[in-house]
Image (cartoon, rainbow, N blue to C red):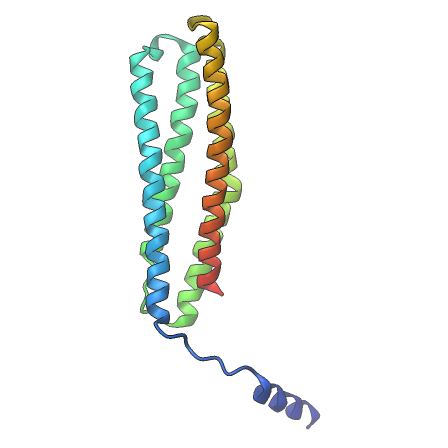
Amino acid sequence: MKEFEDIRIKWQNQANKQAPNNGAKKVIEKTRRLKSGQRLTSIILSITVAILVIFFFYVKAYSMQTMTIGLGIMILSVIVRILMELLSLRQLKQIKYDLSLGKFKEEMIAYYKVRLRTHYIFTPIILVLYVIGFVILMPLFKSALSTGFYTYIKVSGLIVLVVGAYLIFMQIKKELFVLRSLIA
């Protein structure tokens, strides 16, 4: 009988949670922002691929094995990331808002786990591959460009890498915060 009394007391003392006003609208708006962010990421990455492909043909990289390998690694790593974003966006679009709260939360948790893997496993690997491709190109740049322009490429490449990585990880942090708020 003691256990029943403990359960009854806990039941009476629990906070009386009520659904927030416009709760469904807030969830829909947050998922729209996630979708919008993923679309923007895909667009930016697609522009990057387009620039790399144009550069590939402009410098006739296909005639130099080392340049083909370096640019190929860079292009493929970005394409893989675009595909991951598109698959993730598709998964997010398939989550229906009219599910029961438990089922919706379950699907959002599954989506959150996919995004965690994407951000904490695959994104760093893709960044490293991209940098490896760039480093492979550096000796070619050194031999083909003036010392000043080569130095400019090294310095600007490092700055773009650091600033880009910072922006990527800030965006990841923001996205995961929104996702955590949806599954809380």
